[in-house]
Image (cartoon, rainbow, N blue to C red; front, side, top):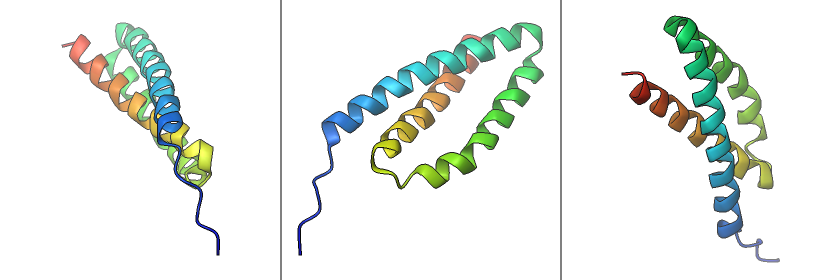
Amino acid sequence: MEAPEPTPWSAGLAVAAFVAALTAAAVYSFADALAQVNWLLAIAINVVAAVGATPTLWRWRGIRVVRWIIAGAGAGVLLGWLVTVIGNV
């Protein structure tokens, strides 16, 4: 019986960090632009987008490379929301 391949932590974390940065910038920019129109609209569209993407991302989490991308996207969405809330207070 062969030993499983080691987890590529350095490459995976680098990919996750890059995806998190891109996602956070996109979420912040989109939410900030919508908040200038109506802050309830910004909240509603962000929640609908996150809830809509969750089932697909949950199914893809078992794929080796994609799991790092999903982790980065999830962290980026949370970071983007946090920066949006802090920036608009």
